[in-house]
Length: 274
Length: 286
Image 1 (spheres, rainbow over the protein chains, first blue to last red):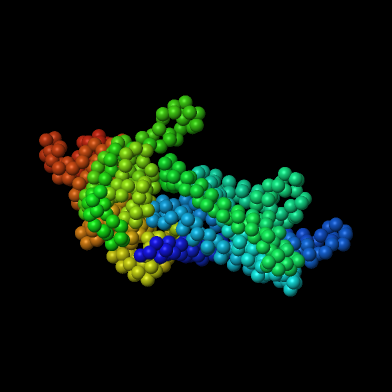
Image 2 (cartoon, rainbow over the protein chains, first blue to last red):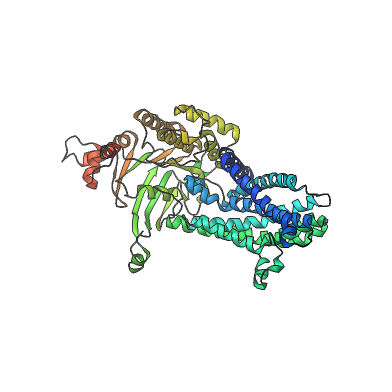
């Protein structure tokens, strides 16, 4: 059997397993999708109400769309980030971590399988949210370059995956608090990436830090594509930083993960009990 | 190094010794509070202490020892889940650190805790395991039905959380058998099983050895099981191997003191400890 057949089968193992888990935990998933939709609606309603809040004339449609892009992208990136960063937490909780780590599967295949499912599931959940919010606000997307936006979103996912892999290290190092630590990383990305506001309103030093977040570029590109209808070619300048970040963060994440995995095997942190 | 043949998975076996452990040591940081640990920097807990043994191809080798004697740590080291602090371990001539991926293809393990995705069914859990070991879906489903059928499990699609502890343990055993390992690490595999299930698993272990060319390393607290299954037995206490022989040889070694010794007598003579068996626990609880 060729190396590639083996790795493809193992990759599919993670995709299929995660699909089965989502299917079996459908109640939880329903709760999370509902939460995501309600959250998106609540934030988008801020845009709808801004004229009344400020008492001044505001381009409400533009503001709604601006916030909607932020909330949808954040919802998507959170699903991708959480799926990857929680892969250790989940396996530790179920007690299966030793069996997965004992299998003849490279860690990059493990990550690819987890990531493929995360991206597909993230897109599925985001489309549902988009459908519901569009129904509420009757948003006009005629001018939007949706294909270009989707392309940038996928490119953006690549760099987010690297961040997710680095975050996945934390539950391996800290079996009880690691999961909460990944949420801190997520919250920092939320703060600096201009999800609901332009990064120009941030203090200068935070604006500099925001250049390191892939979400900053994804959001800029998405807003250009959806709010201003820019062509895919015009969006390419946003793609390069994302690709460069992916090229750096994914191998870096795998390297860090490898080092921490060895540390966990030296100190006995893989096992849950027994 | 001499190449002695190839197994079905296309891995070249470099030796006919299935498992070669030499001077293996493993210690863990003490779980004392940080200040105490800092004051006592050498205060590590020694789990496995200079352990050496060999298991030949096709053997069933038992490791017996009281709770906390280092059996599970030793098995975790062999299973590539822990990196030993000292010594080395080879599986069919492949070093577990240097040739980790090859070793992983040759081994599988059953531990005392049947760890699964509890919401997933037996079929879904085993399908996941089979794919990790490069099996295609059709073959995997067929083998899963076959092995679970042999172990008396008919309900393949209900979540494992709805199954009894014993049934879950049987699924765990099926997971290990599924990948057809040529070195099978069984860490108290029959703990929690009723007598009938225990016997089915024991027969399956023998079948794995006799018909599928598997070598087995078995830890157990069931002395009758060890006597019945094992070709050789090592007794481990405080992380060190204190005796190693055939079950008969071990019994002979104390015949001068006990006329008709059992393996349990040997265990108690050598470790100076009472066995904690399920019956004792049940008595404690009642």
